[in-house]
Amino acid sequence: LAENPLLTDSRYRALAGSQFSMLTPENAFKPQFLHPRRGVYDFRDADLLVRFARANDMKVHAHTLVWHEALPNWMRENDDPEEVRRTMLRHIATVAGHFKGKVAEWDVVNEPMSDDEKSYTNGNLGLRSEQSPWYEAMGEDYIDEAFRAAHRADPKAQLFLNEYGVEEEGERWDALYDLIKRLKERGVPIDGVGFQNHEYTPGDRTAPETFRSHVQDLAELGIQARVSEMDVPIGEDEKDGRQTQADEMAGKLRVCLEEPNCTSFSTWGFTDRYGSTADTKIYPPRTADSLPWDTDLRPKRAYERLLEALRAAP
Ligand code: 9MR
Image (tube, rainbow, N blue to C red; front, side, top):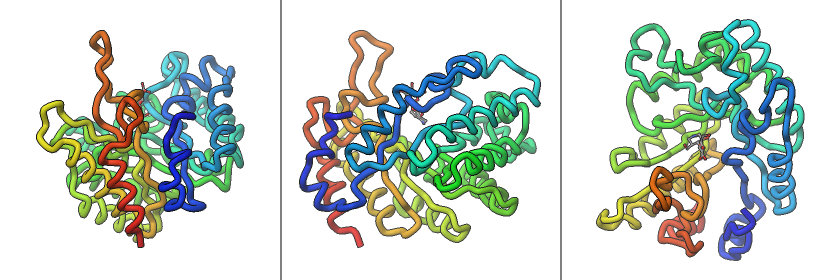
C-alpha cells in the first residue's frame, strides 16, 4: 500500500487537489477477518489501514458489512432465522460503531443480486437467495435492516449497496433499479450504489454511455453512484489490449467526473503485482495485466488516460 504511486505522483496530486483520494480495503474489513468467532473481533489490520489513510489525507470507503462470501464458518452454521438476524444486527452495530467517524462510507450490502436466471422470474425479484444466509433468514428485509442498523451505528457515514454486472442493460440492472426504488419508498437510509466494473472478459466491456444512463436514473432517485472495483484484464495476445484497457477505464472515469451524483472512482488494486485477477491456481502464479500500474509499478497507458480524463474534468 505504501508503494502506491498516487501518494507521490505530483501530476496526480495537482489534479486531484483536496479531493485527494479514497482508500478501499480489499479484504481487511470482511467478517471472516474482523469477526472470526462469535463475539470475538479483531480490528488490528483494519485499524492499521484507517491510520494509514488518515496519515495520507485519504478518506476510507469501507468494504463490506453484509455479504454472502468472506464469512467466518460460525456465521453460516446457524439456521434459526431470528438468531441469524440478531447476528447480522450485532455485527453491524459493533463494526460500524467501532469505525464511527473514522470511515466516510460503507458498503453495507454487497452483491445482493442473483446470478441464477430463475431468480428473476420466480418471485425473488432477482435477489440472490439460497446462497445467502441473510436472504434465507429474512428475505429482502435483510437489506432494509442492514442499512437501518448501519445508519444507527454511524449516522454520518454514507451508505452504499455494491454490485457487479449492472453497468449494462438487462434484467439484472432493471431488478437492481427496482430494488433501490423499493428501498427509497420504504425510507431505508441508502445513499449510493457502487458499480464494480470488473471486466474479466472482452464480453464484460461495457459502453460508458449505458453506465451514464444508469447513474442518471439513480440521480432521479436521489442516489449517488461510484465506480467501486474496476479492473480490465487483457489477453496476452490481445491486439491493442493496453489501449482497450486504457479506453475502458478512462471512459468510466470521464462519465463519473461529468455526472454530479457520481462521487468516486476506484480500481480494485493498483498494481498488477498484487492484482486479484492473477491466476493463483498454477505454480508459480501468473500475474494478470489488469490495473493501471504494471508488476514493476510502472504506469501503463491506462494511468496516462486516467490523468487526461482528470485534466479534462468539468
Ligand atoms: O480481491 C478479493 C480477494 O482477495 C478475496 O479472496 C475475495 C473473497 O473475499 O474477494 C475479492 O474481492 C471481491 C470483492 O470483495 C467483491 N467484489 C468482487 C471482488 C473480486 O473478486
